[in-house]
Length: 429
Image 1 (spheres, rainbow, N blue to C red):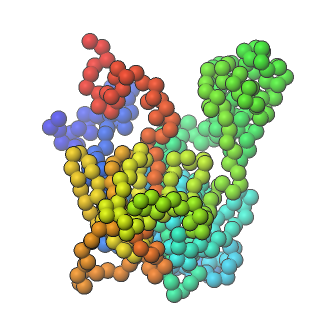
Image 2: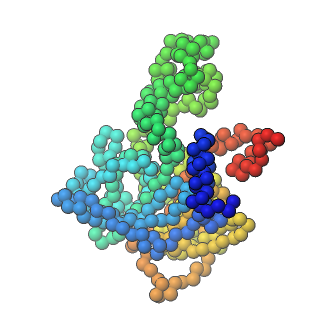
């Protein structure tokens, strides 16, 4: 329509007051990309620089991190940052009083390390660990795990590219706020305790069906003994046959009753550059090194992508995930993409970053990129320990199009599924 922004918001607010429909179901965020891509230059990142102080061993607040923004879009859940470690700690002691752990945060984090960074984290038992990290190393940090980063070398820049992002819990934030995390815990359990989790899972499934343990035992009586049903409801590990019986009785999929435990080494995953090198895959124009992964975030895909000299141009890339790209190398990369019937191009120089929407076809090339004039030449924001050549840190996350969402969409009738997100037809004549 022709309404201004404030007028449109007022109309939607009044609609929400009259009808029990939340505002976020009526409001569609504007696309802030150019045909699915946002570029963010290192110069723009530098303009956002700010220094965060933390207490030192004497209790004085002194510089700890320098933060700079990277490419973001309101269409995705990424919150990436370039962070330079300013606190020098050389003791090797994870309990050094100059190390300041944070309190953990809701957003999950995957990190690329550039230079001599020390990474600290607190495990589930309260023990603080220290890991010496170098260029090309990476990690994954689960939500609310306390952690910190420092430098151990006063002569070499220590930098991390910290990509925090929200998952399904972040998207369910409204219901968490209304119900409360303690109540939700009774539904979810704790994957560190598989028996508790199985107990919570079956309990919520029974409550959803308004069934008792006795009702369940009667429903599966031909295949599972009553005593065994009691054990299963208390959290015993089922066999596959038992899972099938329970799933039939509860009208769910077998996969809905499976519990994948969170092992101790999975709360924080550290992947060394050497490990990534051993798992590298060579394409015609790229070399892909898989970085930190976790089975508990199956759609999180992270790579160190090297653009080879043969990329003239590079091969097409496309996926159904949201992608963040950061150039941590030393040589510029030509970046092209196609969207809305047009082809677009740009240049990614060291320190530049980009956001790429799902299903956007794009290429990275080693084409001839104009050399900046002396007045426009800038130092590499990645420091002396930067990756060599055309090196891109790529992070992919699912956004709202998770596996669960796609599975649901896969059940829609072909008579109308193309109307999803573009409804123009009334549901009756």
